[in-house]
Amino acid sequence: MSGARRVRVLRPGQLGAEESETWRELRAASGAVRNPFMEPEFAVAVGQVRPRARVAVVEDRDDGGGRGGGDRGIVGFLPFERSPWGSGRALGLGVSDLQGAVLRPGTALRAEELLRACALNSFTFDNLEDGRTPFSGHATASYPSYVIDVGEGYPAYLEVLRRQSPKFLRTTLAKERRLGRQVGEVRFVFDERDPRALRTLMAWKSAQYRRTGRRDRFAREWISRLVRTLAATRARECAGVLSVLYAADRPVAAHFGLRSSTVLACWFPAYEPELARYSPGLILHLRMAEAAAAAGISVLDMGRGAAEYKDALKTGESTVHEGTVIRPGLGAALHWLEHEPARRAHGFVRRRPHLQAMAARSLRTVGKFRT
Image 1 (cartoon, rainbow, N blue to C red):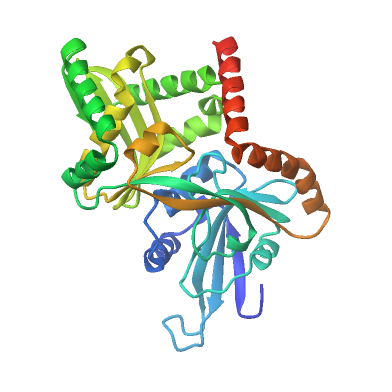
Image 2: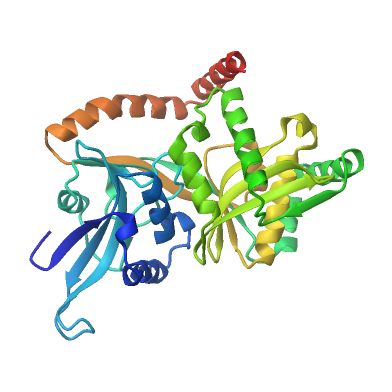
């Protein structure tokens, strides 16, 4: 990149123990929330199912007076995927709920310079972390990511709900009691290890995607493999967590997400459609908030995408961004022609509620034909 800085591009599985530890140290020093999508274990898991996954390791040469004695010191990492034509995208684009570079505080880095060093003509992101990053100036749209703060404990969170969503809370708790009376004893497991429960969740979610006219993510083999890989991951700052709500020992709702020491990233929730009248998904989220608080987790991040249940459960919002950095050249022009018109059309619809509602109705109609 320059005489004092270089970039090494590795496969995620080639990261050594010292490099991974430096990644964690830089993330901690940044002061950002310890979202598990931004940890090296997530990059390694994606690398196992996405052959084009890479990690750029950014290094600076110190002045000779530091521990390295003039050797290069790591100041940042950028996980990404590279197409054969040089187009780049955030690691796990389409499923990762937080993206971006992990940099030492104060590191000045231009996006175009980093792309050149990685042999990329473009870099696309759809959930870029908020804050000062090399890509912040290239965002073309911003979205709220809904969060539940349980840092003061679950009773304090319930008090928030009683103030902002009293009817929702009363109704959900009443449905939980009715579920217990009419279906069977309600039981919740925060960290379920039974693989049959994970298969049930994935089947429910696939059916939900088809029913609502959306692309079935679990029909894509790499996503299914990624979830199974992360379900077995048990690192401190990135661990898979399968939470299951049972009634009479029958799974009625489940969620698979990732947790760090302080954040539970909500990812794939689903429930048994036959029991929809009991709102098992909402009951599950309340139980998850309670268990997360007891486990020392302070934030549940429900991700971007408006939904009534998120509005009812949330205590606040963070911000994520989408956009593309494009370097001049033929490859960039081809990328623009392939992706930009569709992206702008989607953005046009999302910014107009009446068009978004029409699109949702169309998807539901497609879903009816599918099922």
